[in-house]
Image 1 (cartoon, rainbow, N blue to C red):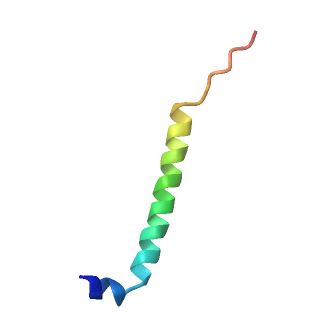
Image 2 (cartoon, rainbow, N blue to C red):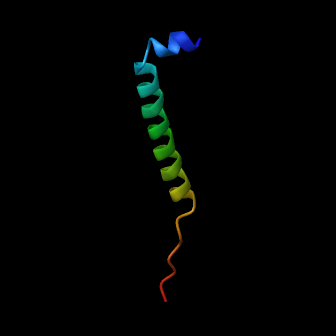
Length: 41
């Protein structure tokens, strides 16, 4: 398994990009769910 991963470095790049996309999407979802409601005076 380790040799298989070592022979395919693009898998790490793909995993990193997928992680970035997932964390960005999670941040957006959490921000949307927790956005403050501004009450005008």
